[in-house]
Image (tube, rainbow, N blue to C red):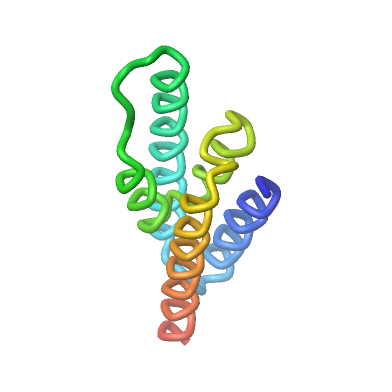
Length: 110
């Protein structure tokens, strides 16, 4: 699944280069993804060490606002939140909603 995240970011970058999207969109996806990956790493560490965890709602919100490529990498690399069906169902919905918003933005820009 992490290949999907990498391909998505490449697609956004290509859209920026082609003038279809403003560079800020790529910047936001990259920043949100790095922050989200960091949240997954901190939560994984907390889970392993019995410390206070990050709320699932927080992880889902970070994915929804554009950090889902980082979340996918976190799930793959860190093996975190990748096997919880209820989390994965909602996560997939947030990815679809985010991608739909990006498609709308692309179509609205012409």
